[in-house]
Image 1 (cartoon, rainbow, N blue to C red):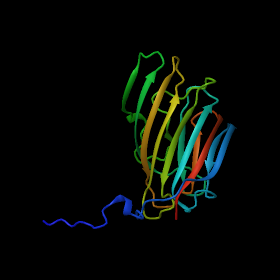
Image 2: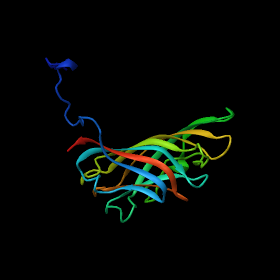
Image 3: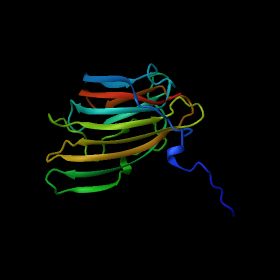
Image 4: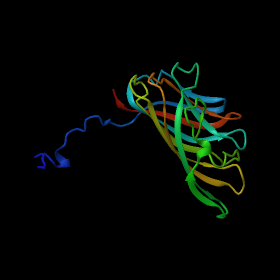
Length: 207
């Protein structure tokens, strides 16, 4: 079989990449918790203006010890956070006293066609010690599509509640199994409030 070569095969000569979002991230909103029950972003920001929405979680600290930081999606601008999701999750952990380390798939924290919140601080729950918090990045792809399911990915790290504390590095991905546009996202502790912390929402790849 003959191979076809393009004359313009140098990266330096390529002027655009079709279907690849271009430009710098645009900061759409910054939400700051102060004893807040949850942090949410609705259709004011998640409205189809961008192909990709990136949430940067910065030092989210719980009021209650030993809790989970979770998120969920909405198709009705936040009236209900109950999108059906299928997810997969693995994590790596290392304890301060160096006596316990590990990495592996965490089957107890994934979802299979569930409307429940997705935990993003698994393995050892998030601690409320003064210096404890969770930070990470959640990326939501093309939430306004009415053709495709809604893919998302998260990577982050949190400090656990059980002394000597653990560093837990989480990798989670999945999809909201709906072809209805997603127009709101909420972050919430499974118990108690978000004491302090910030979540910044960026848009990438303007439509």
